[in-house]
Length: 201
Image (cartoon, rainbow, N blue to C red):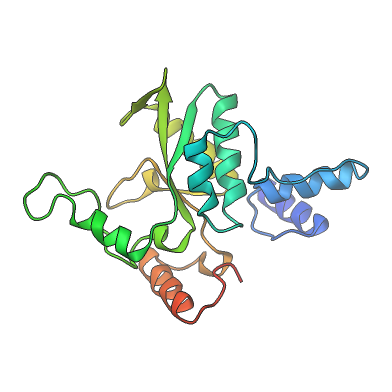
């Protein structure tokens, strides 16, 4: 049995989604099984060590995504990296306003995604900023380090994209979209949104 099979077997045994990636839900389920008399839960929306900006943006994410954002902040902190969640859910209007920045001639474009073409529009994506001494670092090798920590949690990292690299970007792909291209997943998310369907069911 290899490590992937072992993780899947543990996930099946503790009753969480079997995806081979030990994210926050897996670890909480394991902890509850090993320490049943303790009150153990995912870091909730009022985790005291979250800065107000991160807390506000995490609150906009879908409930399934919030524990991953919190876990990433905590995991980065354990590795000496101070991150904040600087963007979460965006409305279609906010996305179009962001797309308009830099177009046609007022500076470099901020994003290539119009409304409905960004995972931020569905509450499954967030952007981070790295801070040192209270100062925001727009670029730093530490983004790659956080990318490694995030993929270990089961998040997708924009720094791994082939076309446009987006190192501050992270997202949680629903299990039903695991084999889909990004374009097909976004089309399915738009349809689910218009049909008022859950994104993670």
